[in-house]
Amino acid sequence: MTTHIIVDEKGIHHYCNRNIVHSITYAELHPNPETDQYDVLLTEYDESAPGLCIYFFEPELKKATRKTVNLNIDTVITNGNLLLKNFVKGILIFRPDLKIAPNVLDLYQLGEFRK
Image (cartoon, rainbow, N blue to C red; front, side, top):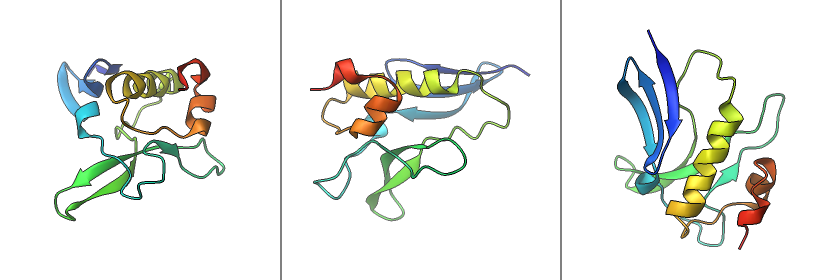
């Protein structure tokens, strides 16, 4: 079984044996319903690494809700931070309407992309 993750112009995708298992596309991202807040942010720091959070529209709830970027992978990803960095870069490029928290840009060293 071959598993890999790619980030491209559409989003981040988890493949298993050349089939997409899960994707998060830039088009699926929504602004934070609290308009003065950031749309892409980090979860609180704890014993593990902080999680990258985004907003998705939940049809069952009929509103946008916050989700942690998680591709449900049960193997170790050695370049996970680089993948998330490239995903955030994609948000900056393909979804400039979304507000990214400064600590996200700092964590992934994307300060040169600040507006």
